[in-house]
Length: 162
Image (cartoon, rainbow, N blue to C red; front, side, top):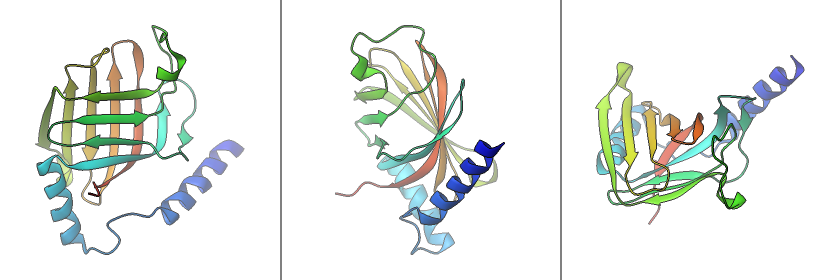
């Protein structure tokens, strides 16, 4: 119970101190900016919290990301959970890959959400990524892999800085 209270307080503090790129925009501008980023396939998902299927969730303090452009998906994120096949190199234990052959499908969800499905074709372990983006820029990412239990992340999207 004490851990739950500590995690709740920590998440509240993180949410207050997060440097969100949408702070200067009105709600209408935010929605337009988010839609533009998603339609142009040029944005970064920044995870703040990870929820493995087994074990406790964790607040992420290191800079992780999932960068999406029209021609590339680049993941640099941790993995906590059960792997059915151990990686040969322990440094590859996270979710690290660059894919140039993938399907990007976007649809409208309930209450103005955007639901994005990305299926990689050229990565050693085929991965499917489901990203749900809310109108305020917050997002949930679910990653499924052939050799691991699924994992989910909570965070936000932001523009790619040129």
